[in-house]
Amino acid sequence: MIEPKHTKTELLISEIAKMLDGLSHIAVGASSPIPGAAALLVRARSQLPVRVSVLSNEKHNDFTEGNRELFDCAAQGRIDAFFLGGGQIDGDANVNLLGLGNYPDFKVRFPGSYGSAYLYFLVPRVILFRQEHSCRVLVPKVDFISAPGSSPENIYRTGGPYALVTDKCIFSFDNQRRCFCLQSIHEGETISSVEQNTGFKFLYPEKILKTPPPSPENLKLIRTIVWKDISEIYPRFTLT
Amino acid sequence: MHETAILPVDELAKLVSSDSSISIPPDYSFVSMAITRALIRQNKTKLHLLSVPQSGIQTDMLVGAGCVSTIETAAVSLGEFGPAPQVSAALKAGILEIIHSTCPAIHAGLQASEKGLPFLPLRGLIGTDLLQTRPDWIQLENPFGKNDPIVFLPAIRTNFAIFHAPFADRDGNVWIGRRRELATMSHAAEQTLVTVEEIRETNIMSDELTACGALSAMYVTAIAEVSNGAWPLGLSKIYSPDYSHLELYAKMACKRESFIQYLNEYVL
Image 1 (cartoon, one colour):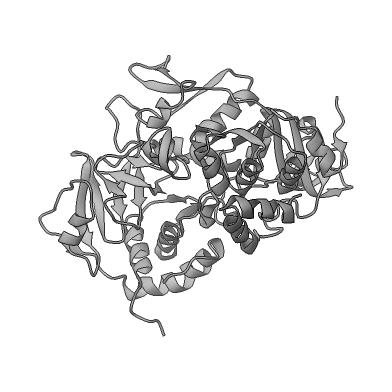
Image 2 (cartoon, helix red, strand yellow):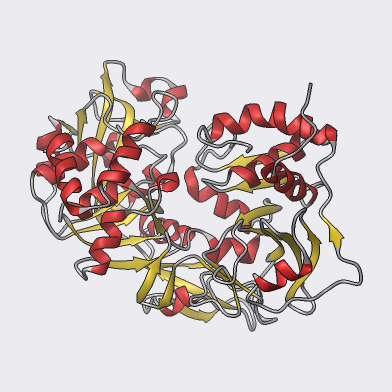
């Protein structure tokens, strides 16, 4: 018997998966269990073959040229979606993965920019995923640009931001206007709780939706097929 | 033609002089913690570490032990166990320099070296603050295009590439499977030092199935047999990371006193 009530984690998995439907190759970075689970959910429910490449995991990645192959593959246009976090994300979708304060004397240091300074340019659908939705994360302007949300016309760029998913809501990225647009608000949140905890300005659609709960079919997949793989890839991850 | 030496791990580490530059793989890709501990025991100093392309406990431990003056990396952290505490402390104390990079830039720099090229261009990067921090990265026009700026990165060469692998043979051929960045690291290094779980009698090159996953002895200066040489990190399907020990390290590395205690208990 499947328990119908879902957790926040399961909601996020279900919502991210919706953004990935129809894609053929989804890459997932190390330490990204929720995006990883979303990619595996898409693979589990798709009629067509979906390739999910989980970096740092041998079973779930088919790269044979070492860890540079992901980057070469992205440059060849063979990766459809990837995920980035961010110690800070601003309203222009610039991402800071390096530190708070003034470079080089950061007050707080984050691990580093990883591949963001490259993949953000070359993967068509980059989903920004940061659970903490607060004014210290979602800022008017990042302290350091690890990867810019957009580029001038003459810069070679085939990829960029697609959406921003947090514990409170989902924003899509409006490519024309180069800013975020509120899409849906998770259960327990309000427009006001989103506004109060967002440091940047964003657009409002005509109708703001409530983020829908995962369907029973998807919950079942998450708790069975997806869980079997994801708990093996990330042994310390839980769905609660 | 040189012969690959087979040495005890401490002798392997003696080949590394202080001031050397060393390329090292990420935590999930064949890290030689055995050499790391030997380098610390031998009090090396002023090492320049190049993470290919990021690093964790290996860098943190070497930095905490005072072996390192600069790190070039796309990221440094203990993954799910949090930030790299000894690296953070050394940066704060001003005794460590960090050169920030991004994963594909490190790969491209090494690939330039393995091709004997002075540089390689790389997409992305333009408009990042990262580019501003790197006077050695140069934005130019694509000489074959029009109005197409692109960044040129200098070749990266190191004195050593150091890693651990599942097995080698008596001739010094090392099996690396599909962790091909280890081959790139070695091609771009003057010398390569490898610890292995076991040294096998059968020549790796005698069977195409093992030969295609090999790093030829041509590049390998010396090997040492050390079982569990990646511990507390994992080694492919051979053994998993020792999560409880990694957690213990993350805790003990948070304070100077307990870090020293860690070194005394597990390294020295």
